Length: 265
Image (cartoon, rainbow, N blue to C red; front, side):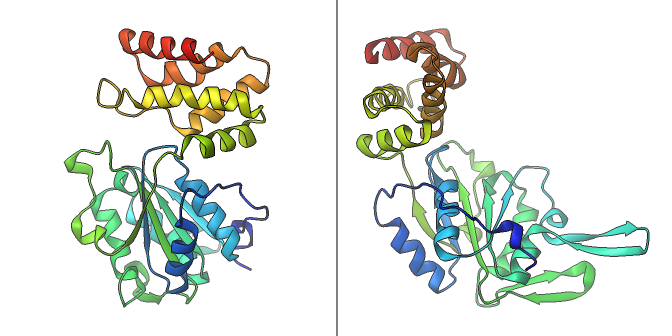
């Protein structure tokens, strides 16, 4: 199997917040391209990993950035000892062998790069390999999934409407406090009561969004704090290291966040 190493062997832990699992399963059954929208660290990537495991499909993940080229996605010719050899890129691998291809933070990629996905997101379901003079028809099991955070992107870096309207979309947010505390307790290995206190810090930081903070503390940051606590670090010190200092360099905001930590512990 060409994508054996891309299969997820163990079930990734995921706590659903609504009907997102059923909706994704319905989209996958029809191979609809899916867009995941939500703030950083809220569980989008973990959700895709869980769904790939649940559906028994290989998962090819690409972390998009401004240096990503179409050749990085599609593939290129390489010079080897025996001559010039074509090497599939991650998108081509997924298209050829029927994997889920996950483009994380797609808005960070250049527009001339993301345009290569357009023929895969309509009735054509095909990928032009111009350098090989080949039109690759997608495997019946291929599905394209993209994710991005619409909250902090500038207009210049937002997705084009011609790209957005090719996708069905699922919107993610931070889980309800009880669910989030359960996630933190499980992932960090701390007591539920301690996890609830860490989540309380996050809730206070999220109230500062738009008042100096672009984003509040993510679930990922809370898990980092919880892991430090599980290692014996004092809770206030763990929250300062994993939440307060990464969130802002502004002294006043740091003081406000430190006060929130002190109030919770």
